Image (tube, helix red, strand yellow):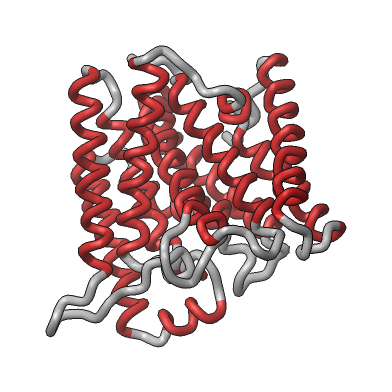
Length: 321
């Protein structure tokens, strides 16, 4: 059996928190480089952070769900998971200020609804879960392309809007597959599976983006639309990220500074940075240059790291369920 906490997963969670703070803080200011902000078309550094969160949630969901099934049975495992993801949906409502058109469709709400959508399949085989994810993604793409929903959501909402979880759950299912492929296997087997998935999905994202003469036009490629190219490519990058941290921590025996304390309590730090960013947005003008922006990022990062380190020293892991 794997240990309950794996060093590389705490590291990659911490990296996701680091990246989230970076793009959220820099995004408050004008004149920030393209790669650190979100766009209606294209894939920037900022656009890979939220999918990585959802992917990691999928990994943790699969492992914890199977463990609960083993101890308490399938019915209790489903009840516990449903409660957890409903609470996350509630936090998403609060985080988004109950703005049902735009703001609530951030990572928390997408994780909460995706978790509920994935719940009936989480005890099934890897192949069934991947097939379910592809089915949800195909349904979202059809609704986007064949109805007026696509035009509306790109102009009016974020992350695919109310139907976006149909697309986000694909990433969560791929994360659950990654948990299967890294559990009780050799280094070579893990590396091969993660690398193959990363290459395949990344290439698939670009392939489905382009126009196919006589079959389909060019599809949108951004988190605003959440059409198939984005979750495919983002899932591929998430596999790459997991592979990189697996090698750093489990093969080379190293760890990157700052990340582990932040990775052990990601929900707490997610909410803490949201409060800090909101205060900064209210108090600091967006016309300041790059140096003040970097200074604010370092300040918020320092506060979040300090909170994470304090909880680590106290041995506290705060999570739902």
